[in-house]
Amino acid sequence: QVQLVESGGGLVQPGGPLRLSCAASGNILNMYDMGWYRQAPGKERELVATITGGGGTNVSGSVKGRFTIARDNAKNTVYLQMNSLKPEDTAVYFCNAKAQAYRSSVVVTYWGKGTLVTVSS
Image 1 (cartoon, rainbow, N blue to C red):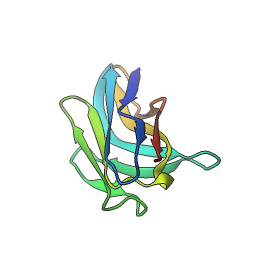
Image 2: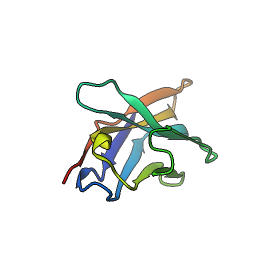
Image 3: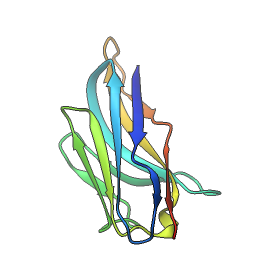
Image 4: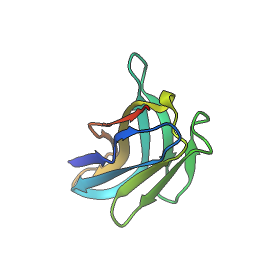
C-alpha cells in the first residue's frame, strides 16, 4: 500500500504565494507520474499539473505561468508552488500518484485526502 499526505494549504490573500507538498510513503517499488488536482465547491475535480519521473510537466492553462510543479524522487515527494493566487484558485487540492508497490505487478493510482486552499482578503 501507498499513502499520500498533503500539507501546506491554508488561507492566503489574493496575489500571494503558497507552496503545497505531498509525501508518498509505504511499500513503494516504483513511483511514476505524480500530480495535483483540485476541486472547487460545486465543481468537478480538475487537473492542475502533473510531472513524470523524468521531470516532464503538464500544467493546466488556467494556472500556467503562476503555478510550478516539481518533485524530489529520492523523497517520493511532489510540490506545487503557487504564485499570484486568485480567489478562483480556492479549492481542495489533491495529490495524485501512480505507483507500483512491492510484491505487486500492477501500477495503481493513489490519492491523498486533500488540503484546502482559500484565497481571500
